[in-house]
Length: 61
Image (cartoon, rainbow, N blue to C red; front, side, top):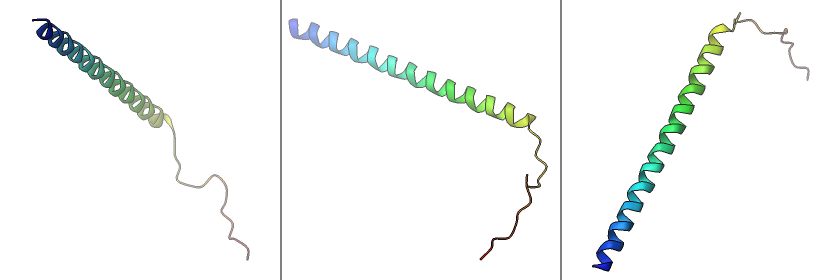
C-alpha cells in the first residue's frame, strides 16, 4: 500500500509540474503577442518617405 501512495504522490507532482510549465509557456506567449502588438502600433505612427536620409555618394576607388 505504501508504494501505491508514493506513486500517487509522484503522479500528482508530475501533473502539478506540467501545469506550471503550461502556464509559463502561456505567459511567454502572451508577452510576445503584446510586444508584437506594441511594435505594430509604433510602426503605424512612423512616416516613411522612401528616400534616403542623406544622399548616397558613389564609392571612390
